[in-house]
Image 1 (tube, helix red, strand yellow):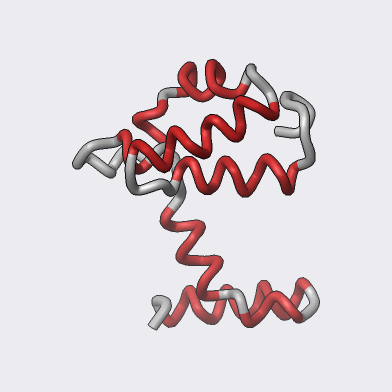
Image 2 (tube, helix red, strand yellow):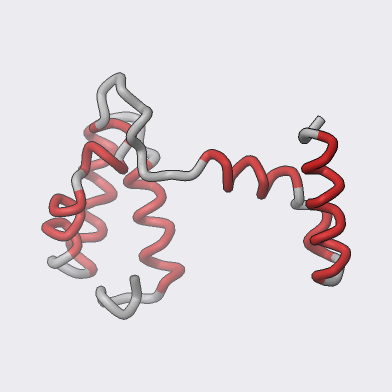
Amino acid sequence: MTSKFRGSAKDLGWKFKAAYSASTVKQYEYYMSLLDTQDARIHPWSEKVGIQKWAKCMSGFNRFNVMTSNCAESLNSVNACARQYCVSKVINFCVKEGKNGFK
């Protein structure tokens, strides 16, 4: 993202996250205007991708085509405590949790 647009990843990241998670069109437009002031190429790029696919407030009622991975988010929440360990321990933890069916 930072190689394509001007600004730091941290600065662009929170604005993109705020824009896609905005619950109203007004909030979405506010955060997109912040992104536009940073780099005018962002808005056309986001429209090319398809705003309806990634912005919550623009998707209507069909939330099945959102560009997110619920599976990845679920795994991240399950293995959050194991991240402090070395890689082999994390893999063992994931295998054990997979066998348990994430109970």
